[in-house]
Image 1 (cartoon, rainbow, N blue to C red):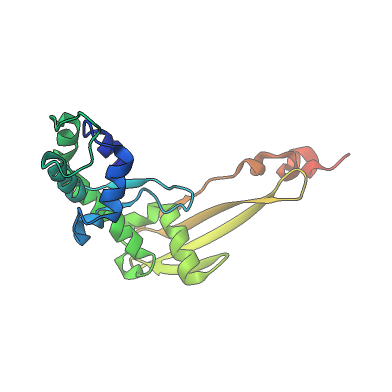
Image 2 (tube, rainbow, N blue to C red):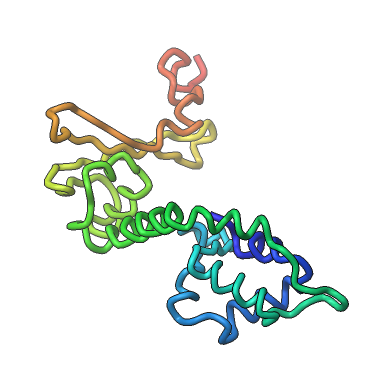
Length: 201
């Protein structure tokens, strides 16, 4: 997925800041087209917006119609990079639909599919929403999934890093798991029996 900023840069001659303001805050796009511009991730620290094919197509149409603010002396030109992005419109729509399905899973666990269990970040959000903090078991996609949490103290003992893992038996009868993996603190001397748990001998 392209960021909105990158897509605008594919339109020769436009004033990027004014074009972005018009796209995001103006009436250039319909409500549905604006919905096709959304945050790249769920992190509050990620401020980047990406643009889907429907919004991108509307923006490109506006560019070709001369409806976007242009730098002085610039004229509408060919847009090979923007055109190339839109060639993958069907693939992009499928990715967006899958992303939105996963987002909806957090509130409606009936939408969870067995393949989603391998996405430990999604599982963690679901468990926080429906089971709160700590270890718990939820039934997802008809399967009992157990969340385990293991804490590892830093060498100073002042902080704790956590390993979060999820375990279940798949529909094929196989035991499966996903998780964050061990944090760096897990390998400190304070968490190592061979180094006497970090104690002086």
